[in-house]
Amino acid sequence: MRYLLVILGILIVFGLSYIGSNNKRDIRYRPLIVMIILQFILAAVLLNTVVGAYLIKGVSSVFEKLLEYAAVGVDFVFGGVLNEGQFSFFISVLLPIVFISALIGILQYIKVLPFIIKYIGLVLSKVNGMGKLESYNAVASAVLGQSEVFISVKKQIGMLPKHRLYTLCASAMSTVSMSIVGSYMAIIDAKYVVTALVLNLFGGFIISSILNPYTVEKDEDIIEMQAEEKQSFFEMLGEYIMDGFKVAIVVAAMLIGFVALIALINGLFSGIFGVSFQQLLGYIFAPFAFIMGVPWKETVDAGSIMATKMVSNEFVAMLELGKYTDLSSRTVGIISVFLVSFANFSSIGIIAGAVKGLSEKQGNVVARFGLKLLYGATLVSILSATVAGIFIK
Image (cartoon, rainbow, N blue to C red):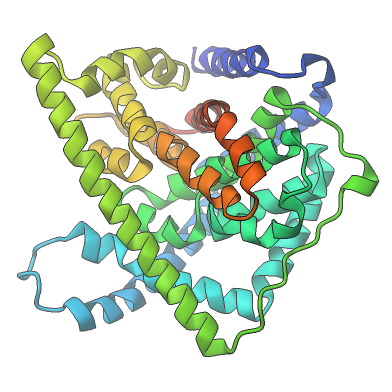
């Protein structure tokens, strides 16, 4: 039954992608089949093998250590603010982003990250049948984040046709920044975070290849990474530290606003209709939770968490997931994989704003296909969770 449900789920995701395709005749099915097979293999390795457990434990241990080091700096500034045993989401989960951002800056400065991003992107381009630029951008998005990544391809942004620009933006919305991965791991199980990161990378290409198929000619497929202005080491370090702090503040502000608004809307709906807004959305998303492999009796609760992510952001939804203590471990795992991406309404504005800062004309183009971006990125999350679900017990 589980295998039939997975097949049904994948067919539904492909069907919804096909319905929204802007060029159905140009869809290339061979790369799609290769990538979906790779997703199954990678999910099986990460979730069901000793090698996968070892890899995930290694990644988790690295981030645990980094968060410990980050805590030293946070405690120096904020030590004594909290009583012993108390917990602050901002202090314990968001502020470590500052330290992780500084490390990313150092790896960028010594040219380690650009090397890794470029050559992983080149390998990916052989698999996905898309352009080298698109593949580079997908890997870069998973490291640098959904707004910063466009700076690295600044030279090409103004010259890209609409279809290639869509794929770049879709990758930025389907992945997450490496600077906040540690924060995710502080809320949900690390193995689901790592699994989602890997599956989303291929899922973004799978859905984009159906929604937005095209062929890139060799003479159009040139990667010219924007060279950063020459800075001293400490200038760079200060800039990345401040960027990390801005991210932490922005996430904190959005959490305050969204959590409060959801509470207000839930109160209004409960008073008028006798059911909360999240419960109502839960019924709408329940069928999607079911095809992802969530047991039927838990689909409404799972759907509510999925909807919370889309209308607010993944942090709000992850915190909401923690409140459902009666959900099965299988449901928690599947929903955890679904939550690890930037697929929400606020990301449309963030991505459009980032592109607009580099090219006014292209920023307006992105804003026009913003809803299609969210549609595609949500399908990526559903696909990743569906594939992972077959290996989650």
